[in-house]
Image 1: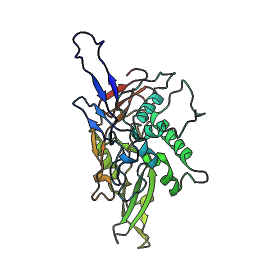
Image 2 (image 1 turned 90 degrees about the vertical axis):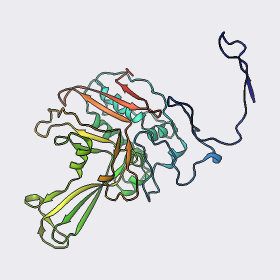
Image 3 (image 1 turned 45 degrees about the vertical axis):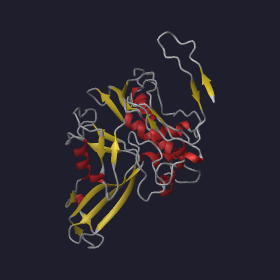
Image 4 (image 1 turned 180 degrees about the vertical axis):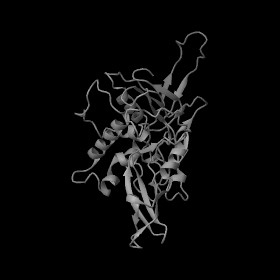
Length: 336
């Protein structure tokens, strides 16, 4: 028990003695009043551990529930290092055309399960890529893909191939950001289906014929007719060339979904598709999933990375992030 006396308080302040007692049992998160203030127990002991089947971490941002029947879900190491990013952090100094790097790092910083792992002390080495060069303009999406792929390789135990199924099951990066696409080709004559599966860390969507994110996803997953030339398909069952339909769907949805809008013009790589693409704070991925029965596929937006400029060869990057308290912030290099 501790006592606090307010004897030296300035005039107008209520004088009161406050006594504190040790808690007899653990408490879960408690919301107090308005303004997004919340108290939350971090790293609970055995008495306060989350029971089987209950949510382990906060689902603010795009972090989601584990997949049905997927024992992996978010890595068990992260279930202990529960993190609550209630306040905004510092900006990052631009070292010379490093706005692309700053923006990617800020978005990753406010990815709760990823931040929890970094704060857990599992990775303590100082690693600087040899490909990083000051003062050279780079693409933010390319950096993010290379960064996550490199981290994926570093997360694997010795002797595990980076492209094996075991690698995707064990990699922390793929457990957080990774999903799986299904490419299904259906014969229009005998209705036989052939499936191919590929892992992904992000979805790159064409926007030339889309004005909304949902429409871009609809275009991404719509049927493609294979009926002539190189697209003509040989059915495994019919044993001959047939007209077939090909469709991409999301076979396994990631815990954290990253979407890249392709603004490179297909006719001129230097030309930017500078158009508005509308999106909402909540995205329901259910219409684009292979088997969506009885599962929730709603994602809550927590980060947006923006490129300004008329060309793909120049411009400036900044980002918006949402903290766990629900407050949005603009991070533009060192300005917050």
